[in-house]
Length: 170
Image (cartoon, rainbow, N blue to C red; front, side, top):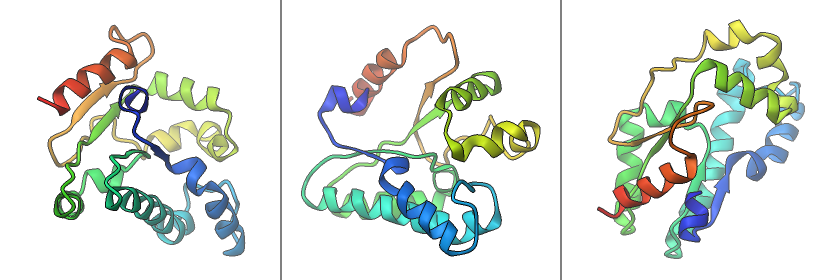
């Protein structure tokens, strides 16, 4: 919705990095669909997010505002990481506007199941184990906008995006 409202390019972590991530996992002796082991978290995920951030910075250096979509859970909850990002973007005349997508467990399971992605099979087969790693009350360490993505929420995502744009330009 932000992209539709602004015309800014979207950098979505999954389609941007998935081929790299899958091949790297296999090359390192892992499963292409792994998103839960130490191999992925410590060896592959940092490279995946680095690719996404370098792509974003390339746009920003060209003066192009950019929308990024990825969980950024570790990053957005790390005040030092967020400060470094804000400083780097600020040095290029750009503001960082974090948006946190909030969801409840029931909605999350529905969305993940509907997505039918091979990388989600582990999560769905071991739902309780997966949910034990998720803190639904976690929030970024910096000022941010929360978007409610629960099933049946009273305000549509499109309307929430419009409200966010208003807050961004206020």
